[in-house]
Image (tube, rainbow, N blue to C red):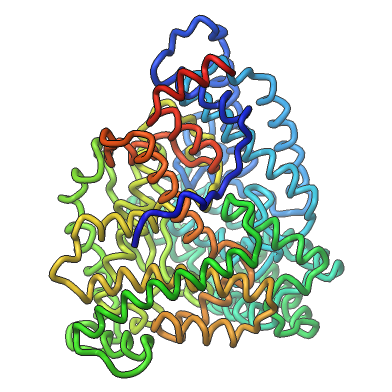
Length: 627
């Protein structure tokens, strides 16, 4: 695969914005003592960023625990949950509006590079939340953007988020931690009821999830409700953690009593609401069927991809990429003697060869996780070829909790704590081991772990110039997913798969998978494809297991546009690399280009300003003179 064409541009920047921005970033990069810099602006922004982070933590105690920020003055957050009500959602949108006003008061021309980027990113982030949160008063995700139009689905709602947060991230080292756990279990009932009420309100406005999404939701709610209270993870995980910490007391029994008394009745109420909604639901997969559905998809696609691309353009891009990658895979398969049948059939045949598959057993699942860990170990010695700085990047490879496998992605990453005491982790969905042929595992490990998501996050976290509110409080899917897909390609470019055609086919299959997503996501939400039509296309195009592709398609149905962030984001990273190479000429250094991730996640327009300033000093000086 090659550089993205120069004509591809995911973010539009006016000349005035570009020159002003380039002046600011160039000033930070090469002339921090410029005479025009106004004293105090950087300090003012720093104080505001610290304040915004503390305000965000108070609004989201679950976020505080996720990133280990629930200690010290924030220790009281450890026993609380987020406000999952519609009122809480509205307060978050109002807060975002106020943040835009506060950030606007700070003069961008007075800021050095990193501070300029911090302000620009936060203005963009809060501006989108304020605008889209006011426009769409339904669904999930007011804190970050139009993630899903559905308050409860197989992917959204506190019934998924809270038990996972407690089991994976709420540490229990002393009795205060255990008491905080119990407080959260008690509060969980209120969170469930708040989301149930929001779901009912949305239903009244015509926001009804697809029938198959509700079926998967009911399966997962059943798994939450099914065990005896003491066996529920809300109680069993606390008992296990308390024992490991050497705490005396009947912690598990106390949690079980709360589960039985308040949590299970709240789960029952949610099951009843979802069951009632199931009667009204249809099999229509796309958001086109919803009130404001077409507008919602256009905004969701723009937010997820950080672009102005129209659905038809994204669909065409996907078709083009699928054709090009398929041709490359066809040649490699022929070299392995696989010449008969469709590409999908030949990839399936490759996966069934000796040494490529794992047994459907606990031993097989453990073996899959071992191959993931081994892949990370194999890429680490190659990292100095790509990066000049090697931040600490400890990580863990874990299985997606069994209770959440039904609605989860094939794999996903989760950043570690800000202080580094809890490493980042990526989770692998092992519901069906057949979805993981050996040749496919390395590229997924690189995408989720190193040098993908967890590496990118660790690099930005190591930069003291980026405030916590940017490191952990903003989301830019196209940047993050685009980077992870981009480095899959970079690993191939440095020859990692030389002598391993099956491994390279795994990499190309991953690229094909993300390209097919462009076709399918726009097919579902713009062209009104059915779920079965979309799942058949994914399976027949990529050669991946039908069970995994159906689950993936069902995920796209409830998170419109998200599946497009990967490939569109990768194309933007390639466009920026081509721009940097063109500006720098023979002085271009790939390691220098990759240092961009030290500045953290940002929208495309900001990234272009930084690239232009860093790789073209003459233009930077011109920009400073004309701003």
